[in-house]
Amino acid sequence: MTTIPQFPNSRSTLSTPKKLEVARAFKPLLAPKRYKGAYGGRGSAKSHFFAGELIWRCSQARLRCVCIREVQNSIRESVRQLLIDKIGTFDLGDRFTVLEQEIRGRSGSLIVFKGMQSFNSENIKSLEGYDIAWVEEAQNLSETSLRLLRPTIRKPGSELWFSWNPRHETDAVDRFFRGGGKRGDTVLAAVNWHDNPWFPDVLNSEKESDYASDPEMADHVWGGAYEIVSEASYYARLVAEAERQGRIGDFPHDPGRTVVTSWDIGIDDYTAIWFLQDDGIRVTAVDYHETSGQGAEEIVREALPELQPEPRLIAPALISIGRERPYAYGEHFFPHDVKLREWGAGGRSRALTLMGLGVKPIRVGAQQGPAERVNAARALLPLMRFNRTKRVMLGLSRLRRYARRQSPTLGGFAGPLHDINSHGADAFGEYAINCPLIAPKPLTPRPRPRPQLRGGVFLEGPPVERSIRRTRT
Image (cartoon, rainbow, N blue to C red):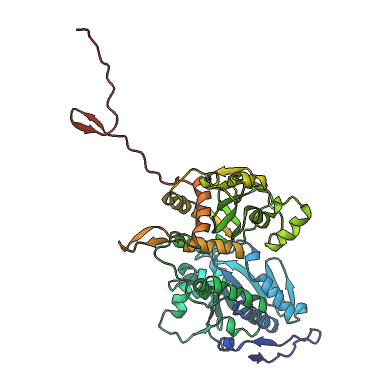
């Protein structure tokens, strides 16, 4: 671990800042270079390193800095809070003024927060005089945005910083830093959780749990590996498109609207539930829940705590699943077999059991095939936003990895693969095929009229009606 020496105070009235400690893996990024990149998995402290560097430099010199994301729907999605935390960590509160949209330093420094999709070739010129541009979550940066940004930050000695969790080899930032043809003005650090000397126990527990349940995805999330998406995947391209367009982000529950749920119930298998809000233009996934080995009462108590008969138990139950406020529920979407299959003893249908627990009104979908659910989900996904919480990201992972099964005899694909991902995908498809927003509706084969035999020739469609005159003989 390298310790950067403390700079002398320029004013005796200012407090003495703490030393900026930097993990050894980030040491190459301390040297002056125009392009600096840090990539790797969760818990590697990439964002913390760049945030600390930015605050430290702005406390010592007059710098203009812009913190960039590909899409920034609100200031809450920016690194503003992380920078505020670093100001506190370094005891530099008397050197900065924190405003709603920017941070100003007593040294004359300025830090602003921008989304690249708000820029074009003309208005991006407003960034020409900036010293540092830091692109967070750079895996989402488009090729167009990168081409706009690079020549814009052109002040002598200016730097462009990029931090990201690798997603695909084809992403613009990966092609720039890792695509071959090494540049002399570029430095790159590969960092992961084991490079972070302050890696907390709580994250270590999360990491171990993820590796135990889904090693392939955990290697992407924690190990910094590229995400493996099979060509058999139904929705991977549409999920990636949602991420590029900024539709996966800070989209919390709107207390002014009802929440609908959509279910896939498993018998001795996983039960998956999506929690959705429809504003008439788009649908927001505000929460997701999945579980296995539980009965109806346990599922409702855990996933829909607002329906508990004991009011005093609602608040702690909400806290346990990360909800800030209770939901007001609208319809609950279920597949057709909720009417047919029994749940536990007593011979009651699942629908009656759930209604008895407060899950109502229940909307039972028509019996549809997998192809129709897939078509409906594909039509709905471009209209979706996803709240970036751990639970929703799990559901999104299920959609991303929902795939066709391979036929061992024909070598091609033969319908959906039933695995851990199919339950969340089926629950999403159940809502998609029944919600009012989708246009066009999922394709349904049009019944062809039965051929009619007339005079030894088959005719398509019904015969033409003719009046027949009957005569007596």
